[in-house]
Image 1 (cartoon, helix red, strand yellow):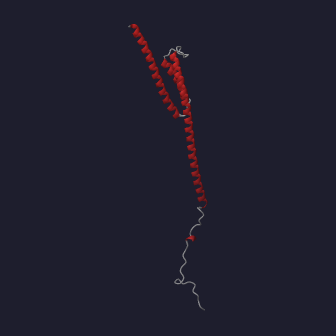
Image 2 (image 1 turned 180 degrees about the horizontal axis):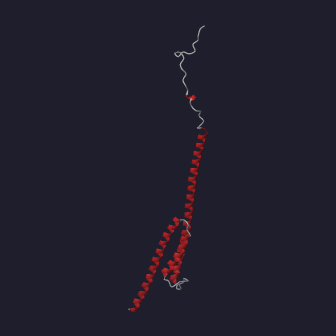
Image 3 (image 1 turned 60 degrees about the vertical axis):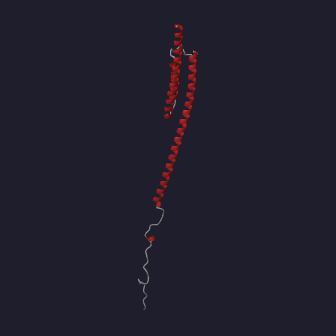
Length: 168
């Protein structure tokens, strides 16, 4: 009986192996990969939320500081106006405590100003605004001290001028 050759290496090539047989199925990294990507997205979202929350808090603090500074500036303006009015009344002798206190013009005006300035500065809660107001208050105090000293020197000049006229 005739025989049929089943395999002849010179006639039929050997079948090659495919990569598909030795490669795991592609399931997008499985459950662990899905969890990992989800946690990454959650972390990014939380980071963005924290950034926006921080920006919001910073903007709110800046707004509150500006409001506080504006309120304090108005209070200082009122204080300066009332101190100027008090100084005019003191010079005219119409201030209610002009002669009762026994203090000079500079001590009375500066004392009154310092009381008001301390109340305004103590009412401020923001530290940056407080430092700015303290510097501004010191500048205004110097201004009042210079004005009062100039006024007292003028009065002394008038007094000694009259003394010189009377003695000659």
